[in-house]
Length: 222
Length: 214
Image (cartoon, rainbow over all chains, first blue to last red; front, side, top):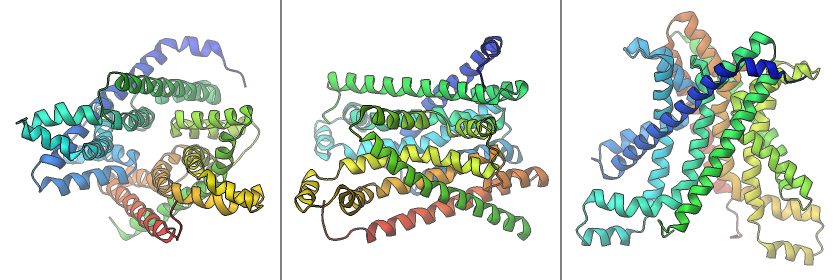
């Protein structure tokens, strides 16, 4: 069992493109999930009361069923209800709707950790609800939700591998294709595992860096 | 959807449940060893434990499963795909459970161990009578969480050819051209199983709340 370097160099451009797909689906999907999750968390806290059970059901559904099944439902079942998407948009949509459920729970925990007194003080000073959320709650909970948020980013990076099931041409899809074309499964998959590992380590390192920056500049009182 | 198809789905969810249950239990045993290794004073041993956890948490389970499935025959081990799937799930969940257990073991108050020393308990007794029960109780919610994650992650073992719930839904969807009801049913079955696990964990946690406050 030897790693054929020529194989990797000859596939270089294709691999780079696949890595680009992995990175962009991850970053776009995670960013969309972050924003959507924030909206869901705010809507559950400040929105009309009939929204709360609906959003709760959404969160429980997303957390209680495998991502793969959600993706299959969207990609293969979607056309039957008029949603025909190409693999990449379907993957992005699935990833962000799935991640948003988890992010909304992270934001909800953060909102609940902000001391009531601070919010009341903001109200007394005549701050609007938006100002209270943006100026008081978000800065105060940043320190608390950062580790959980980074964790979720890592989980989403690894979930992008599942997109290979619906033929999104990302790293796992491309590398297993190359592996089966050349009968070099073990080498290519080992390389693949190492690439993901490197990306995850990088992500968690950036997370630590962000944490120490936040602590240094006193964004939070936690 | 006919009754026949639904019973096939139920049968497949039996596979999902048994695969996950076996992996969780084996993973629990393995993770005890790994968390002990991570907490060991010997540098090399603790490094090995940490490297294991770092790798199996750092690579996607899908990639690990493909790697293990293709690696075993190269090493001369021709095992059925079910075994490869169980090995993959076990190694992955062991890494996560080891981290949880490490936190649990570290939360055991020093005073209790000193008291046990005074009473002349051996290390083995201390482990089984004091450290393990306290650590287990502290990590039970996290372990229940992990059980649910593995139940969902078991949908990925379809990639090595095990016909569990997801694969069954996929196969039936492509033969009946009805992906929507089939995948929705699969999702519903996962939801039912996971709700059951969550409920059981809650009950177990309540029965674990015996006398002593830690």
